[in-house]
Each structure stands twice: as structure tokens, then as C-alpha cells.
Image (cartoon, rainbow, N blue to C red; front, side):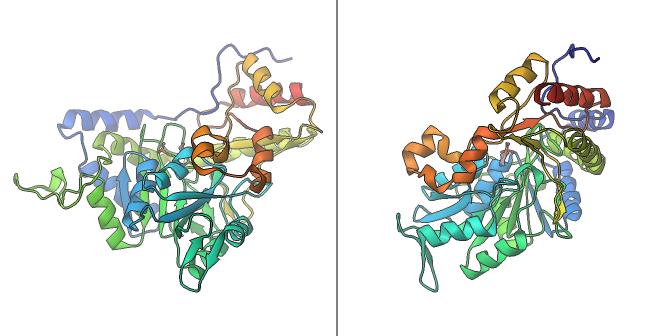
Amino acid sequence: MRTMRKTFLPFALPSISEEAIEEVAAVLRSGWVTSGPKVKQFEKEFSEFVGTTEAIALNSATAGLHLALEAIGLTENDAVITSSVTFTASAEVICYFGAAPLLTDVDPIHNIMTPKTLSDLIERECHWDGNILTHTVTGKKIRAVIPVHLAGYTCDMEEILKIIDRYNLYVIEDAAHAFPAKHKNKMIGAWGDFTVFSFYATKGITTGEGGMVTTNHREYANRIRLMRLHGINRDAYNRPGWYYEVVDAGFKYNMTDIAAALGIVQLHEANGFWARREEIALRYNSAFADIKGMKLPLPDENGKHSWHLYRVELDPKLAKIGRDTLVEELKERNIGTSLHFIPIFEHPYYKKTYNFNRKNFPNASKMYDMAVSLPLFAGMSDEDVEDVIYAVRELLR
Ligand SMILES: Cc1ncc(COP(=O)(O)O)c(C=O)c1O
């Protein structure tokens, strides 16, 4: 008989090794703490890891999504398609430009954008004149699609890219959850025009706060490099003298060497973190296999799941207790959970500004009442894992 946990188990925690702490300390002692050699090294190693020619380090994934849209010259006359089940960052960056965010529904299993949900939206709300894809309601021109690899399960990039090509669009993958992940045999990061990773505290690897854009387009990469630091044509580390030129009104989105030093060590540890996450996810899957009304996350049959999150869904008709009760009861037992995500169209800002029709999102709406993310992070001990299993089985069996 297990007793209740004495300490609270959060749903996610970063794993910071002594080596990482030493590397960060070395930067702190070095006298160069902002963007410099560590950022360059992190970018180089990251691009090699995912297999792209370019990687640009930033202070968040949100900055990366913003600068990718800036690089393609998004304007207020444009619209961008993303998934209804994502964090606000994937949609808010579209609004920065006064452009319209359009949302696809998701599939009922993995809650991601699929070629079908994307095509459904295009057929329902857009007009193709053979050259330009227009949103019929707003008259705006569709420029890009932002698929989201939710929880680390990969979207069907091969088919989505066919749709992108058919309508002359850009694809900017939100891979905040997808490191390290593969679709088919290719790393996420090497598929689309741009891929954007997050190194937020709970992600596959962390720099505290941070992000990376990968691309094979040299020109766009250079535009992002320019705009991440005020539109200044030389970064401080490479500036030989006092002279520099501001060539555009840029942003302050650069990553620090303090963060990059942590990122480099985390990158070296990434495969180990991933292996532990997968081990825990598969242990959960076998321990929960006989629970009625609980849908479990499946391994990615088309690639490599990053196992960023362990999301389950409770069917209110079949499960012994509802999702909200499970969350409360687990909290009572010192086990943290989270929800990924409240659909974009449910948030007051998006509701009042864009007038989304809930009827167009049957799967996202259903998911919202049933999903919950259980603790999953590389630093979980076997005891932590067994505590979660015991509590969940006690409540749902
Ligand atoms: C799906 C998704 N996209 C984008 C982001 C934004 O990442 P960042 O916090 O690095 O800006 C997050 C962060 O949680 C996310 O979950």
C-alpha cells in the first residue's frame, strides 16, 4: 500500500546538470554575458543537430514566430492559418501585424492540424483564383500556415507541404513541443520554410527563456538576424569600432551568452532527456492500458515523438470520474497537472476580436472538456512515476 507523496510533484521541471551550471558560471566570470561566442556555437550545433543550414537564436519562440512572419513581409492585408489547439503565441504573432488569424479544427486523436482539417478550412472560408488564396469573409490574402506539433506528436508535413505548394504559401512550424522529434526520417526543424523551437523552462531543452528559428533560406535568416537586434547591421560582438547603421526598426529579441551556455549543454544532453521521457511515457501507457474511458497518447507511427507532454483524455461517459475531478483529486495527492490547451477561440480576446464560430471546431471543443497533462519530465524518479500511476489508477480504476 503506497502512502501519499510528502512533496508536490509539478507536471514539468527542467533538468539542470552540474556541467550546465559550471558552463553558465564560466560565462558569468568571462566578462561577456550578452550575445557572443556562446550564441554562435549554440546556433551552429543546433543547425547541425536538426540538419539545416541556418539557425538563429532568440530570447523566445514567440520572437521566432514573429520574426519569421516579419521576414516574409506579412501585412495587415494578410491572413495566416494556425491550429485552434495551441498556446496563444502561435496566434498572437499574427495579430501583431493586424493580419487575421484563421484557425483549423484538429483531429480527434492527437489534437493537431491535419491535411484534412487544413483543407476543410480552405474549402469553407477561402477562394483560390489560380494565383492568390483569399479569405472570403475578410478579403485578406492567406500567406502562411503555422502547424503546431502538439505535445511532440508530429503533423503530417509531407501532405501539408503539398497544400502549401498548391496555394503558394509559406509554412512556419511551431515546434515549441517538438524537440527532438522526427517526421518520417527527417528531423523537425528541417521540413518547412521556417521551424521555431522554444527553450522555455518546461520544454525538451531549456535556456530559461529562449527560442531558435531554423531554415534553409539564407536571405530570410539574415533578415531575422538583422531584426532580432534593433535592425542594426552589425551585432555588438562583431562590431570593430563605434560605427553601426540602423537599417530598419527592429526588435530586441537576441539570446544572451548566459542562456546559450546552458543551451549548449542541454543540447548535448537532449537525447538522454528524450530517452527518459519516452521510457516514462511508455511505462504510463502500459500501466494505464486497462483504464476505461481514458485515451492514452500513442507513439508517433510516422516518426519520433518528442514526448514533451503526456496528454490523456477522459471520456465523461466512460471514465469513472471527470477530468476536473481528476485534476482536483491529483492535486490533493500532491500531483500537479496542466491543460494543453484552452482552444484559442475560447479566449476572450480572440472571441471578441475575431468572432470565431465554435461549430467549426467540434474536435477542439470536445478536447477542451476532456484533456489533461500528467507529470512528464526527464528528472522524474521511478518513485515519482509510480506515485502518479498509483494515484491515477486509484481514482480511475
Ligand atoms: C505551442 C507553443 N507555441 C509557442 C510557445 C511560445 O514559446 P516561448 O515561451 O518560448 O515564446 C509555447 C510556449 O509554451 C507553446 O507551447
